[in-house]
Image (cartoon, rainbow, N blue to C red):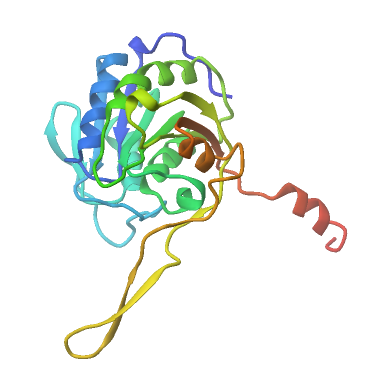
Length: 258
């Protein structure tokens, strides 16, 4: 279990994301983190890495570029950034907490398997550092007002609790106007799949190609899921586990496999 932290002011916080070093959500997250502590580090991708999942760069070198004190960019994935930050840049004094985001767009349901935002938090968890991923739902334009109002107190509350060392926390802020946000709710992962809607086209030479289309929201009705909670105007908080073992299937299969 991670040790609860009552006062974050003495903690070292690492920030990363998948929208890139210049993303507005990262700037918002930095402001939030500096409200919690003075010791804030940023190691983020040089370019947008949305949808890369928990991928590592294995066939090209990684070169951290220092942009300012405690601020670096890496031409790699979110996973690369967190790995290099903890194992190299901050090796002598690693972070106490990792915050990933704030993603411009929700990470709900099965999105978590594709999301670079979740992957950065996941890598921190694998490195033994408690982590939180934050995402803001959008509808054409984006407003950070709900994040700015709720995130600091929410992060403080989360770190006063203890959770398993193979667990990360996934937070999603609804698209609603801040005056219409109803509060915070714990939620389980719902069903929301990206990538099924393939758009088929032809180039000017008649050769076929395709785009992966918009996400398909499959279930915003099932009560208690992250999709339903966010659709209802609440901020969803979902603990996600690194261990993907299906224990009920393990028990069932044990009857036929020695």
